[in-house]
Image (cartoon, rainbow, N blue to C red; front, top):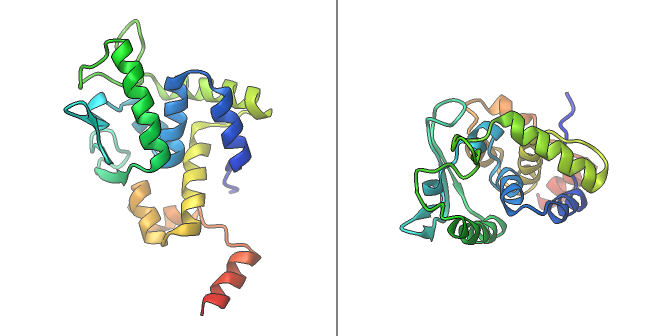
Length: 185
């Protein structure tokens, strides 16, 4: 099974094309924290802020994680910047209740569904670079890029996989990787 990823250029086009700060935040969370779309949909304001200040680590709560096991993902620079932008937008909308979903239906107050996120991403990606992508493509991109710079066990932990075999799907060693490995000896 081929793992679909987006290039850095496609990522930039997607984020530039996405005019909604909320959707840009959703895509950055999947790209830079590797969350599954179902986890993303159920994020609360309190998952990113404590006493009004941004957190440095995102704890994916057990109740929203696929295997019902919490995991901690450090919040990197790109995501931290986006979270600060999001904080301003939430304040403007008077959405400061820490138990509110970040990605919610305006009418019902319930969280968005994975299908709603999938439709938006397909629309935005097609407009940005001419092909529709699925939310899991952003998680694949995160994992594939991470495999280049981190130990596979680190990748496993950040993705919340219980099996290393699940994580190995994201390893794509090429001839340059093989040459670099030998040269590092």
